[in-house]
Amino acid sequence: MRSLVKVLASVGVGLCLTSCAQVTKGLKAAKLGGVADDVVAVSEKFQKCDKLGTPPAVTEEYALGSALAIRWVQQGGGLMLSGASEQQLNTYVNTVGRNLAMQSPRPTLRWTFGVLEDARNFNAVSAPGGYVFVTRKLLQGVENEGQLAGVLAHEIAHIALKHALSQYATVKVRECKGDAFVSTATERLRSASNSNGLLDLDADTELLGTLADSTIEELRKGNSKDQELAADRLAVELMLSAGYDPEAYRQLLDKMPEGDGGAVNHPKKKERMDEITAFLNKLKDSGDAFVALSPDSLHNPALPASFSVVKATGVAKDTK
Amino acid sequence: MTKRRMMGVLLLALGLPVTGAWAVQKDGKLYVKARNTRVLKSPLPTADVVAVLQPGQQVTWKGADPKNKQWHQVTEPGGKPGYVFQTNLSTKPPNMELVAKDGGTRAIDPAAFVSSGAAVKALSPGAEKYGNEKGGTSAKAVKQIKALEDLANKVTPEQIAEHVRQAGLFPVVAPNTTVGPQKVAAGKSTKGAK
Image 1: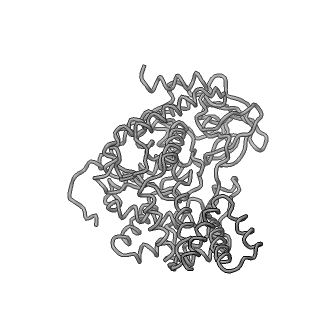
Image 2: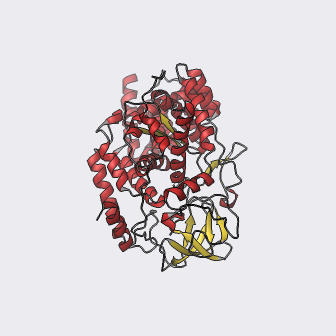
Image 3: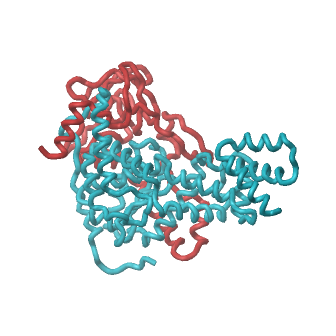
């Protein structure tokens, strides 16, 4: 009988993919009782869980983003912050990054940019709320400010377009719809799904930890191909807005080792480079008179002397 | 011809809408996207300031300056005419969400943006607790992020504007400024604003 309930529940859930509310309403109206009531209960629970898929309030975003930032810093071996030269490097990265972020669709976020000690992975990561981190290894491959701006703009774009929040919403809904033998986190999510679906993560550290852990597992797989290409397009727009030549970003992508960072969902770099070219062609073919740039406007400035600290191989640091 | 120059020529020849801000008609509305956007009396970066606008405020677009298409003639919300650097404007409104000082979340009046708590940065209290209790190196990460945020908050719009000027980028993010004549900084002028 228990398995029959499960089968029917699955069928009900499957039907929910198209018209969950209608299926539930129909079954309720039929007043079949017994197993049908169980299916209705499961269906209603699933509908409530879907509320958690709504975009979170910015306070919830900051809480999640802060927790994810802690995890990224841990995994990146800590931040390069020791000594005046490393702090100067971070000041420079924040100057370049904030200039771009203030021109993004989310200029009021509290943007923070940092350099991770990681000297093995050519990578950049971001977290909701405005956290962007690049690895020392990536910076070692950067040749001018335009290339740095390109990678920062790409991460800014992920935040502005709320890509991680989309994965977070998926995690919340999935956890809420979990098995009958539920965790404390699932119970709390179900409780939230009974109201407006918004969570006060600052008041529930345990739930924050559970959701941050699950979200970071999703993020490790990388954003979807569509999200990655959308972030590239917005990155190009931000570069042009600030006065950088997007060609620098293409050059940096070309240097990027294929599949570095373990992001299995990422599109191949050739596809990304081709898409950037196509996007620029599409822009130029639009014929809009609102904006026109002079031929010499776009510019990729040289890196400052303080940048050389990324290549320093002095005393080994404790990154544990 | 270098790739850079070729791209620039293409953008100029075909009127690239670089900000993702698509078609706009004369007398149409555009949004300001960067803080402290200056409306200037003439299409020169050193001209007198007519008004200072914040993200989300709207201007009426009158068209690009015929001599320098990077500067666009607008009417500011108070009705005064002036010029704004092109990439300060967008057809799409920016997202203005932030956390107010009282902890609540709200969309903010653009004009009140500068005096708001938007620039105050702190790791979320829940995340800080989570990090400090999680064990391993997470408490160290919390400490480092807080130090990084202190450092990041010291990067002001004034510093950004000075970096942009020295690097020859576009003068989109401006320092806090007031209406009237500008203090002209010494040194290399902004390449993109010529």
